[in-house]
Amino acid sequence: MSDDFIVETRELTKEFKGFVAVRDVSLRVRRGTIHAMIGPNGAGKTTCFNLITKFLAPSKGRILFKGRDITAARPADIARMGMVRSFQISAVFPHLTVLENVRVALQRKLSNSFHFWRSDRTLARLNEQALGLIEAVGLSEFPAVPAAELPYGRKRALEIATTLALDPEMLLLDEPMAGMGREDIERISALIRKVAANRTVLMVEHNLSVVADLSDTITVLQRGEVLAEGPYETVSRNPEVIEAYMGTGHA
Image 1: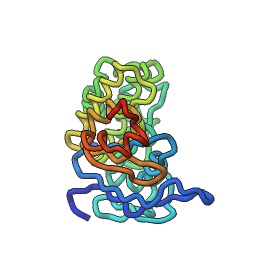
Image 2 (image 1 turned 90 degrees about the vertical axis):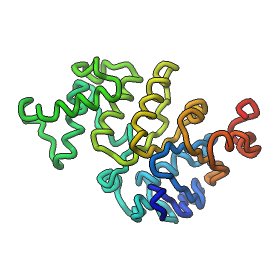
Image 3 (image 1 turned 60 degrees about the vertical axis):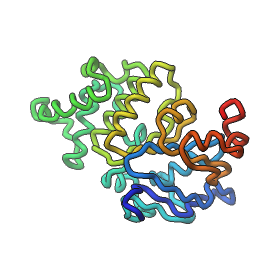
Image 4 (image 1 turned 135 degrees about the horizontal axis):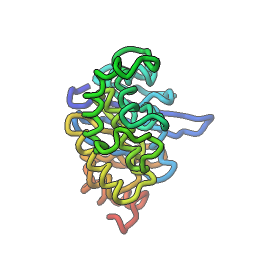
């Protein structure tokens, strides 16, 4: 595996009781880029994403992360290695404040135990780092606000902050723009671009304008197989992609 690629899959396959959801997917994610996976409903995007992040075990094939075979690893193992899946691994507690949520996430780097019984004074040493993460995701006005009271887009930003608290080398985003209005999409897009400055991002996303704006490389899946791959300018002109997914209006 080349050092240029942080993640590589080789003939990745997942079969569910005779139905092949992902078939022989060989994917390479270049270090320091934003890589998107797109495709029509049922194309195998979510299954492929779940295989890479170890929420599913493959029926066949291999997965490598930083040159290490992680095919049999658990999600917690790869999180410790530096691959973190946002919105699923992130710990957001609705009745804790923004600051408290990020501080709890930071505790995971200290040990395997959470010191909920400790005084605020004991945990105050984490405040500076937590506030820095809060500022980085545009929530500097909300540290004392309970997570449950945040608007939807701001909750997503908080989830990214708790994920960044693990200091991942690679961030995996599963439909980060789902359910968002235009203003929130613009805000989270800017945030993804910012956090990708020194990380690798792999995302599944349906919003093609977001994909076009953010992605360095796009992998298009159809019926569980790779249909096309490349920059948006190339993929969007591929006749098979236009027919399978985008439609002529997006060419």
